[in-house]
Image (cartoon, rainbow, N blue to C red; front, side, top):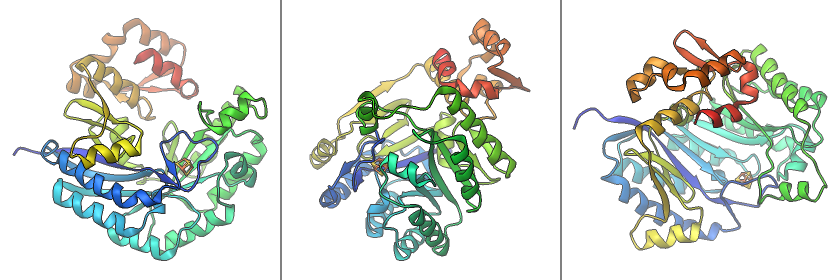
Length: 379
Ligand code: SF4
């Protein structure tokens, strides 16, 4: 066989203790009794993929959820054993998501010993009011303790997930949060703007008029403050929502943003392999049932044309602040970025939302603030 294609591997752990008020990720609360069946189904799903993805070498592994840290190390030991046996699996970056509450030193040490070398901690806020309104179960002291334990267990590549623009947050309180955050010495930070997703409790509260989103101008000021403060402290703002100290960019996520192949396992997981996009449906019971019968779980499937792939690569790549390289796109897809978008692109450049840096097209800072609208126009 010729040279293998590098790819990323994602595992979705669909279990949570309780549902956070803003959460629209697929997870099932109080269903840990299903973990043994889930493990069995996963083994089967991996086995079904084995032959089909033999052209790929999986160089990153990311366990997300849900709450992966609810599960014991023995679960991951078995998953890793099967992955190593069935796939060309040599991850250089191995991330596990964790919630701060309930983490113990022995669990973290065991994760570390299994090969996880990056911990993504769902801190969400360093302000007690933020944690309360988001419906998180942990306190600030749990976050600090989790970081301390993770360091003791040997994790030095730690990322914190944070949410900004929650009702009640102000520039002043955000400034204070950033100060506490920067004193923690964490090398990677993800800052997501709070969105009120339909179906969530927060969305319901908003419709009932009990809470309201912050005004747009305040959100813009907050985004700018985060950018400014973190860059001042040596972080590079490398993706719309992500900041890293040198050498700590998330390698796994780069596969998504660079429109490179990835395989997703578990309910709700998406894949982009063999020129096709798959998305397992978000339902644990039907996932278990199908795999018990030895077939792939119900899923959506879409085969994109080369042109659609090109457009998608442009839109995803623009999430990265370095932008997208025109020669690279030409080489991968055969389309010339300048010619393809023509007048549309000139307009966005003249309006100050996009700019060329050498051969790379990228967002300007004002462009980042309206990235969604611009991406919708280009896709
Ligand atoms: S935010 Fe995370 S911990 Fe909270 S319900 Fe969603 S997946 Fe579970």
